[in-house]
Image 1: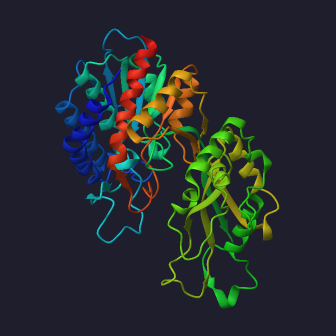
Image 2: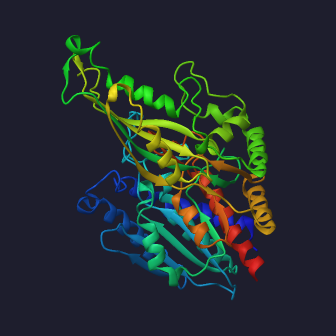
Image 3: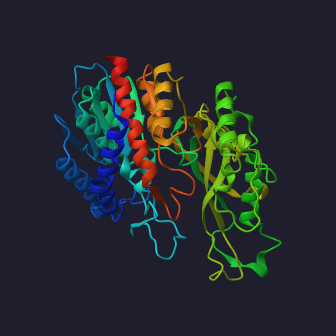
Amino acid sequence: MTDPTATAAFVGAFWDEHIVPTITDYIRIPNKSPAYDANWEANGHMEAALQLALAWLRAHPVAGMQVEVGRLPGRTPLILLDVPAVGGVEGTVLMYGHLDKQPEMTGWREDLGPWKPKYEDGKLYGRGGADDGYALFASVCSLLALAEQGVARSRIVVMIEFCEESGSPDLPAYVDHFKDVIGTPDLVVCLDSGAGNFEQMWSTTSLRGILGGTLDVNVLTQGVHSGDASGVVASSFRIARNLLSRLEDPDTGRILPEALWAEIPEDRRRQAARAGETLGAAVHQRFPWAGEMQPTSEDPTECVLNRTWRPALSITGIDGVPSTSDAGSVLRPHTKLKLSLRLPPTVSGEAAGEVLTALFRDDIPYNAQVIGDFSDVAGGWNAPPLAPWLEQTLDEASITYYGKPCLHMGEGGSIPFMGMLNAKFPDAQFVVTGVLGPNSNAHGPNEFLHVPYAKKLTCCITDVLAGHATRRG
């Protein structure tokens, strides 16, 4: 096993000297995921991020590590590290992260920006540092920490993709392409998830799926004078609002079709209750509320379940609506909404798409032209039960480096890779964790990487790899 004092010292120094400067450079690269940069290949930002990572790997090699770069035609690249076992330990651990980013988003603090890194009070601000640029560097740091102490471990495969924020469309092809290299992992470690607080390690036990798409309501072929047409031509926005009420209760936000709900397993309810008890009001207070705005529930456990196991709708974009400063007296010809429907972990996204298509197909008010496209699907995931050795290792590691036991909770976001891997490797154990704690604001303005927390998490992962070897030995 590891010496915790030595691990903490090595990891802390390595982060300060070799990881923070590199992530700072990485933040400067506007490597938006293909869904947000159709010209990603020509723009060259993805290649710049790739080359930064490869240069860093050359400067910080792990003994015997083989580095492969996947470049399948028409697809984003992929980095695959194959690191041989130490001490004759059997088994394979697959570690995962990604290096693509969400778009800029507005609302950044005046002295910050998505491509403008700033280190302040232990937080490294900028897009992509926490989601998920740190994962590759933290994974290698864990391996080097074990090597420094001569600790045995299993073979490690590290997979870093470049299209996770687009739903990982290229990843299945790479998993098949590199299937002989990957082998059959018995432990998967993913560093792309969240943390309920910055005071202990958090293990993600489930992920919601997502169904994305557009609802386009057309009432005219062109805009007309609102004084002339209003009262005769129905507002496209009103019709869209009417249609959405078939999906979502406008008063409570409850998703109405029962087919979009799932039974919450009892163990997930227990975990949610324990997480809610630990976090208390922080479950909802961590969001940047406007004015006197209140949460949908002040019960911490209900908040946890609402964001992890219950469906919810967000409207994330609107076309056909000018800004208020540019809006004239015009009855607009159409309203196009971008829908983001979060689904319980065990609800099929494809089946949900069929539900929405049927919901908006018949009995349209005034026979308006409605075009629905609900094809953007990412599956949810419910983790297999933790093996006793792994649950004990997570608890002990969290107590060692944070002073508190590990807590287990679902997350509201999606990592499509997890469900796919679980299907391919049904006997594998999963450790899904991350650094996205309160106010770290992935995808939004002022995203930050909490460096002290990330250091301790790296130490915990080091102990998980050592514990896996002990169990395999």
